[in-house]
Amino acid sequence: MNNLVVFPLYLILFYLIGLVLKNRNYLLDKTKISKHKTFVSKKQVPISGGILFYTLIILFFNGFDITDKIFLFFILFVGLLSDTNILSSALKRFILQSVVIISYVYTQEIYILETRIDFFDKLLESSQLIKIVFTSFCIITLVNGTNFIDGTNVLASGYVFNVLLGLTLFLLNFESTYEDQNIQTFIYFLVVFLIFNIFSMAYLGDGGSYLISFILGIICINFSNIFVNLMSPYFIVFLLWYPALENLFSIIRRGFLEKKYVNSADNLHLHHLIFKFLKSYLKKDQISSTLTGILINTIILIFILFGIYFANDTKMLLLLIILKTAIYFYTYISLKKLY
Image 1 (cartoon, rainbow, N blue to C red):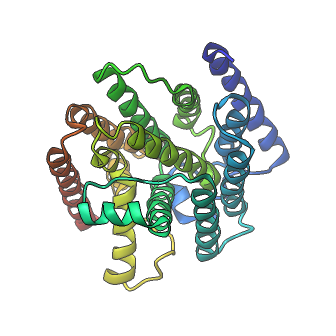
Image 2: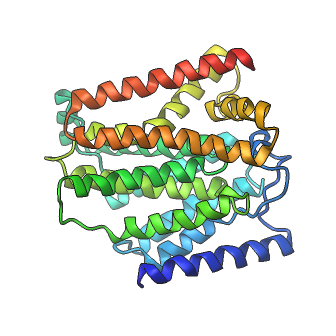
């Protein structure tokens, strides 16, 4: 179906499904369940993003067979169990999503094939088990990291939009004739979702953040393997570094620095601290939440626009990753002193 039809169709579907969920008091954001959700809005908002995106996959995505769609449903379902508080244990959710992701990588043979680290690339080439474990680890890190940053308006969805835009600009920069209709459809969905999310009219929820990051991981792996001669694998690392860093830092911070249960939720992510800082001046939750997402994604987009020109320069990409990490920690430490 023409994307010009998809865009208005999803505007209507978002509104209608949100209305139905509200009227039936089902799949609404329950702020009492998770502390960090109170940073977005005090009102109850339909968690419709994941369901609508899965519908889009069924109807409009190309190249996804029935096995793909079954696994994607399972990853969405794990998130929905979390959103409805049926599965409240973070450890059980992690185990379930890991089983789904590892099984998907194995059955669909979606592998990361190159890291430009010679000895490790030889291991990847010689061992299917190492390919499965390494690829699964990277996707699991992305999925959980994206869920971690889904704490303010437009942050997670805007971030995924930025990455897809970066891949699209990469193709334009190299004047590639390669086309991926799924990326265009994905971008249309995110634009529609962002319109509703800016005004706290729809949320991704755990189901939505799991699903969009899972699909994003698959797209990025395919890109890296297709453009192996034009793209350093570190360009993908560069694009996906923010949620990966958020995930890894949260584990270190909770488990080693604060001696807390690693999977316990808290309000000490970078976006929460930025939200608090903005709210101290603006006094409005929704405005502060939306501006937090816009501010972080603007900085990420600037990096992406610059990094595209070094897509095949591993050393430059590593420098940019180090710079992004330094900015993250400088901002985090500065704001943590205030709160």
